[in-house]
Structure formats: C-alpha cells, structure tokens
Image 1 (cartoon, helix red, strand yellow):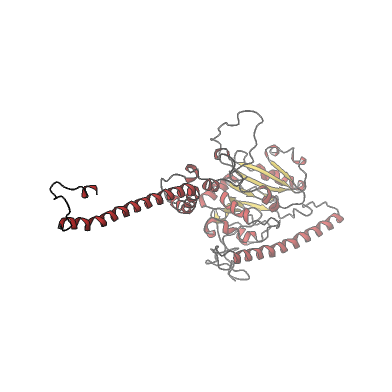
Image 2 (cartoon, rainbow, N blue to C red; image 1 turned 90 degrees about the vertical axis):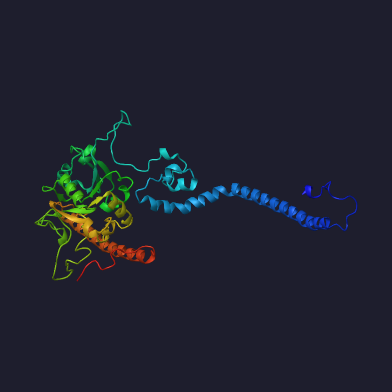
Length: 417
C-alpha cells in the first residue's frame, strides 16, 4: 500500500488538482485502505475464535471422549462378531468409562490384571507351588446331590460311578448329618454342605452360582434315589457332546416311577427328543413344538451344559424351593432350538426309585406315630409345591407382559390337545 503513495520522479511537481492520474489514485486508495482494515479485522476474529475453540476442547475433552466411546461401543461389539483383526477395546483403552464396563462390579478400584471373577470347588494342598501348571488335566464336570443318611448305600453306589479325575462331587445334607459319611472312600474329596430340611433347588440357588461352577463343563443336579447299574457317566457325556444336547437327562428304566412318558427309555438309538401320543389328554404329534412332547426333561436327573446352567440358575426363584413349573421353561435356556438341544439319552439309563426324601426317607421300620407325622409333612410339601407352581406361572406371565423388549421364541401353547 505504501508504494501507492510514494510520488514518482516522472510525475509533475506542484498542485495537480486537475490531473487525471491523481484523480484515479484518490478514487482507488480509500477502498483499498478499507479492504486492508477489513482483512485485519477478520483475521483477528478468526484467531480469537480459534483460541477459544481450542480452550473449550481442552476443557471438555474427557467428556467428549467418553461420549464418543460410549456411542461407538455397540458398533465395535457388532464388528467383533465377524472375524476381524480389530484390537480389544477393553485391553487397549484406558478411558475410565470403558474400563468400568469391562470389569466385574466392585473391582473398579483394582488393576485389571489382578482381578479373578471366577472360582471353583477344587481342593488344594497346604504346601507346594501354588502356580504349578496342570494343563494336562481333563476337563471336569460337577455332580451335586441332596442326600440324607438313610439313602447312604444308594448314594455310595451312585457317586462311585463318577470318576474322580473327571468329576467334582458336592453333597447337600438336608438332614444335617455329615459325619456319617466319613467312612466312604470318596467322602474326603467331596464338598459337604449341611443345612437341615432344605430342597435340592434351595441348595442349587445358593451354592451353585454360575460364576462358581463356570469351570465345569456339565452340571449333574440329581436326586439321591437313583440307581446307576446301567449308567456310565463318561459314555453319557460322549453322547451329549456328539448330539449337541445343552440340557439332557438319562432315560428312566421302565421299572422306574415315571410321571411323563417322554422320559421313559426308548428301545432304539442313543437319544430321543420327542414322543407321540395320539389319544387321550395331552396328545403329542410330530408337529408338537413344546413340553412335555419335546424340548423337555424332568427335574430328578437333569444335566446342564455350562451355558444352559447359567441361564437356568437365573430363572430359579429364590423363594420357590421346589421349582415346580421350572421344567416347562428350561427349553428357553437350551442355547437354540429346544427341539434339538434338549434330549433324553436312552443308551445310558437309570432307575428312579421315587422315594419321598423330605418325608420318612423310605425307612420301612419307622414307628406308626413317626409315619403319621411324616405323612402330614409330605402333605404340606405337596400343597406348597402346587402353590409354588401357581406363583411361578404367574410371575412368568407378568414378566412377559412387562418386558417390552423380549420376544417369545415359542409363542404357541406347549401342548396340543
């Protein structure tokens, strides 16, 4: 701009009010000066805005990062379902929000590497190296049984069928008598839990939390009055794995006390998943889709996969100790189609004696007065069982109605009449 106002040697000296070139100069100079100041003003405004924006970013950066990461987390998890090489956000991000989402509740104050959110029932030695590696050990399953001392002989034969190398044994002593089992050779390796007058499902809800049993491949939650002369647990598991059964049971010998025909032993093959009944009440056809025609096991000798047990445990009601009605809903925990993933193993079968375990325990020498008391107790047990069935069904119905995000995969009635 200064070059515009320096006079040239070629220009005439003195007043030049009538010179055309000077008129042109004064007509151009004011707009140019004005444009110069406008540019300075705009540049200053841009610098100021940029400084404020950078300052606000520095002040709000943590919140903005958390919000961005929270929004992107679902998309990231969706991508992980595909075989990609994307890094694990939980392992590589230090953002507090994501770190808390990736941790078990209550462990946020600890470094992630020290957190162990699972346990098991493995017994250990009092000496030796705690970090010894035993990777060559076979995977184990868990056998859990409610027991009373009057059924000691039957339980002894049952437990003895399950190899120590492959099974952890847990006994729920509903009569509180633990010492009477000490003479059995397997007793010291079993876990003993003693609480008087409680049921199998009361014990299971409180002592078989999924995080405690997550290391075990299968959970055998059996009654005590089971004879296993024709049962091999290792062969049973081979069949269960081969058939993809998430929830199963050994078939019942036809001499057993059988309540539902689906559980009776079939004469052909290793497994059956349905049965047919074309007359009378509760008919079952080839197109029947639910219990007790298909996708169903009884509650006396169920076997759960790890995943199926985690689901089933959450469905057990803490205050409904007999779990009546639960069997008709177990198919929802079959990790897929219950018509395929729930089945009865025929080639490995058991005999169910049908002894009322919370009554007189099958002791035929019980005095008359004691038998009368036991009969009264059994009547009270049966009445509460029916009450629990009504309560459970009502809770299920209410839960379905209240959960607008849940879709029933089996909307049709369970039976076809």
